[in-house]
Image (cartoon, rainbow, N blue to C red):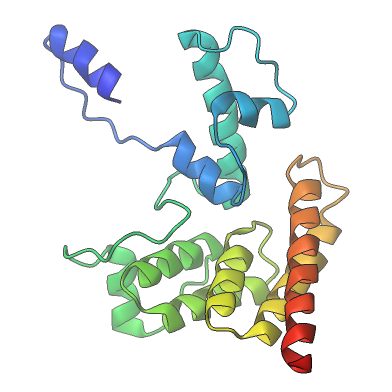
Amino acid sequence: MSFLQNAAKRCNLVIRNPASCALRMARLAWPGRRSYKLCDLARDGGLSNEGAHHALDDCKRALIVYTAAASILGTASSPTEERPPEPRADAPSPRMRAYLQSSRIPEDPVERNLLGIEFEADGQVDNAVECYQANVRDGFEGNHPYDRLAIIFRRRKDTAAEIAVLTRAIEVFSRLQSSPRSDVAPKLERFKERLLRASALSMTSQTT
């Protein structure tokens, strides 16, 4: 955006379009990767890296990565990095205001995820857990609620809850193996690996 804004400024133009970051989207959609470089994301997604670091070719690759991440997350915006943002001092969002008025989490699964992210940002982790748990119960087909709950439960040393949410993630993503989504197999494998680690940790804690 800084390149674009500087170019626009030289032409006496002002760009006020809302912007969403493909890098943030990738971090949310595929947490735990060693690299989020565009060339690595493209290669792992089966895309050609021909013309890498040329502006137009990189824009095309970034658009594919962005839309793939959006389809996984169920949203075309990037509300946060893979870590919850710092608490904000501004007014609550319409989403948060609606919750404060009704004390009910949204019916829409994407809104639940976004509200959970806002709760985490405000330090209201129990409320975030409630939002994510609703999506886990309903079999949400994106990884975000499972990832966040597994991290939260690991921090709380609640291994049983961590194992339960990872088991549910494996159940949901196993049903998606026949879908055309290219992210299903690697996510399923990652959930299985995390479940093995959590189970080993549980066994260790029981024997000590």
